[in-house]
Image (cartoon, rainbow, N blue to C red; front, side, top):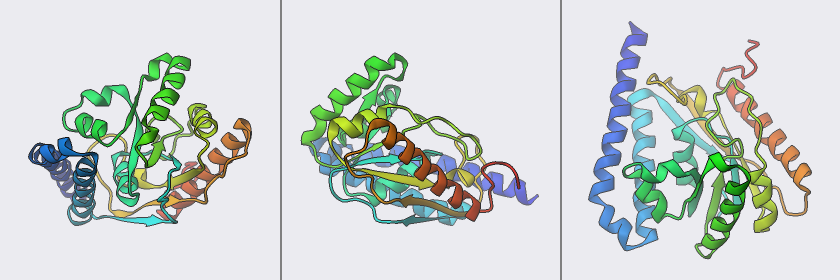
Length: 246
């Protein structure tokens, strides 16, 4: 009975956050058209609303640990669900994401993503996509901010091990910017699929930055080791064994 009641609350919560997205997206769209700053304000306001609703409606509290960067850096983040996107974007002053191209055609999300400077990538073309991603990022460099990339390329469930893709290393070298790794455990409470939301403390943790000067192989090894180790620790803190041994 308790599970059924929580599932109902989770369903109402999910319907509510998408309804709020649509309402805010339409009402404030003139502001988003007027300036990137306006679009960013709308997106941050939506993040704050959902973070509040998650705590009130389904018992998901949230916490940001470490020091979110304020300068122009690349952020390489663990991606487990929609919620880590909101927590990261809300924590940094001018975030813009590497995102799959299909999202540009999603109502509300696509229009606002374009306005805040997100970079769409065609994941199906591999090498060509990496080169286009680099050129698109460099072309958008005139818009200062923090570029967020998900080095595993997609959402990854808490108990899944997925490889880190080379695109993040290419950007690390091409952009000549430091990289700030980010770990998370949000997938324990807000999974990548389904309706049910579990109460608890969802965390995103900004780790010490990786400065310029590493080779691609050194960078990839350090990034994956630091993000996976810290994410595993956060998930164990939440009572979930990422290796499925407990």
